[in-house]
Image 1: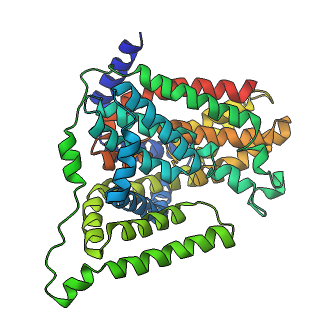
Image 2 (image 1 turned 120 degrees about the vertical axis):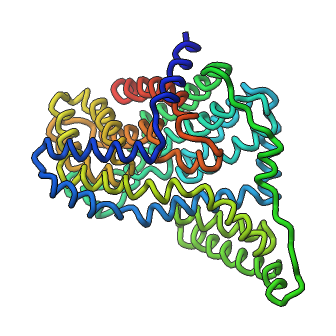
Image 3 (image 1 turned 135 degrees about the vertical axis):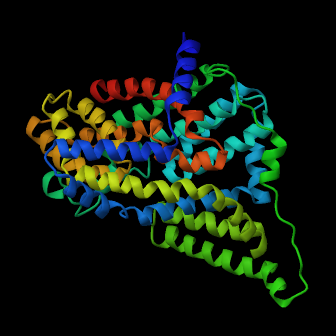
Length: 438
C-alpha cells in the first residue's frame, strides 16, 4: 500500500512541480488575484508587491551565509572526520535513513538554521558510506527533521510571547516557555514525531520508483581541499598564513564565550553563522584554503538570492490586501474552544505556503487568533503553539526552506518533495490530533 502511495506521490511531484522560482512566480499570481478578489485594485496590489519585495534582504543574507558557512565548515578536515565517524555507524540504507532523520530532528529542535545545514551535510557523508541508499530519500529524510523546529529552542512564536513588551503583550501578557516549548502537550508531540518520522522514512526505503544513487568519489571530490598554491610573494605568504587564521578564529571564539557565559546569550541565526564562520576560518588553517571553500560554497546560493525577494513580495501582498487576515478569520468562524487549536494549525499551514516566515506569519495571525482564543475561552498558549506547528508543518512542501539543503545536496525540489508529501500527510494527522486531545 505504502509502495503505491509513495510511488504515486513521487511521480506526481516529478511531473508537475516546477522549479522553485517558477512556483514562487505562480504563487505571486495567485495572491495577486486573491487580493483583487478581496477588493484591492491592481495598482494597489502592485504597490503592495513592490513595497514588500525587499523586505527579506537581511534574512536572505542570513540564509546565504548559513549555506556558505555551513558548507565551508563541512569541508574542513576535522569536521569531515567527525561527520564520517558518525556516518560509519550506518551500514545499510535503512540505517542511513534512520540515522540522518534522528540527527536532523535533534539539530532542528536545537536551532532551525543549524538543523537545515547539518542534516544535509550529514546526508552527504552517509551517501559516501552507504552508496546503495536512495539519495533522494536520504536528503528528504534530512529535510523532514525540520518539521519540529518551531516547537524547539529557537521557535519564533514561543520566544516572542515569552519576551517582555512583545507586540501582543497587552492581550495575553508574557507567556513563559514552560507553557509553550516545555509544556507537556508540546513535548509529547515532539517525542511522537521523533518516533513517527524516522519510522515513516524507513518504511519508504525501496519505494518511490527507481532509486537515485550518487558516486561517493564525486562527493569526496567536491569537498576536496585546494592546494596551498604559490608562496613566493609576500602577498602569498599572507594568504597562506596560519597565524592570521588563528588570530581571527580565536578572537571570534572569545567573543562567543563571552556572549554565552557572561551575557547569557542564546542561539540565533546570526550567532550560528558567526560560529560556523569562525570555526571555518580556524579549521581550514589558512585564509587561502578558507576563501577557496567559500568560492565553492557560493555556487549553491543562487536560488536563495533570486527567490527570496519574490516571497517577500508575496508576503507584502498577503498582508497589505488583508488576504492573510481573511484566511485566518474564515477558520476562526467555524471554531469552538476545543477545536480552535486544530483550525489554527490548519490555517497557519495554509498561510505558511504564502508567508514562509515564522515571525512574519505570527505578526499576521496573532491579531486574529489571540482575540479569538480569549473570546472563546480557549488555551492561549496552545493556540499560539498551533500557529507555530502549522508554520513548521507545511514547510515540508514549501521549497523556500528546502533551498539550502538542496543546494548542499545538489538536487532539485522535485527530487525530494514526493517523499516529503507523504511525511506531510502523516505528521499533519499526528500534530492535529495531538493539539486537540493531549
